[in-house]
Length: 230
Image 1 (cartoon, helix red, strand yellow):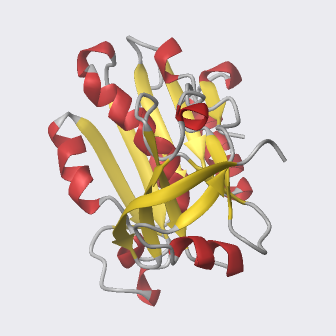
Image 2: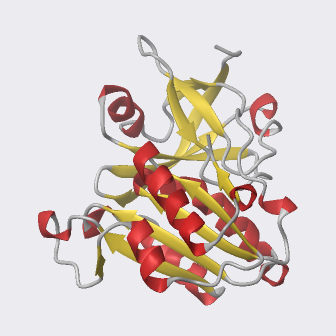
């Protein structure tokens, strides 16, 4: 475990079913180490093993935003925190996604479930200088419609000409869904976009990442144009 630093919850926003976005006040030692998009930190509470969360905002802020989905004991404790609650945090870790090293190209973003938080920093960066990138396509999958997050922000994304393709893999289990059904990799292959001069960023569970990557191969993308947040 790397060094731990004191932190405090600044704000809490409900995103979707069992999902929240926590804004966390952190010391300079932590926020100054946030230099790559979609790095992660470990959050620590008393009598609990560290919980690892991807930073859901682009670098450049003196606080961190963490997207938490309540799926287990540790994530339940983290997601239950309220503004003013204290915790400990590590400095940011991981190589993240090198979005700034890939300008003037088309971009495909692929995410399923809570991994959408790894795409949000890339989208924020692209929106700051939209003309630096060409076509941007986001493929985002959830099991059911009530689990899609960043509903309000997605309208801003669309207004910045970021194409959003949503698909629910098991829509019959949740609220009514009139959109695409299935998995993100199948939606990608159904649309079959031109992948010339394109880079892709992919995040999610192992099976999803493998399947989406193979779909990109079928489209003709070379391995060195596909970035994984691992």
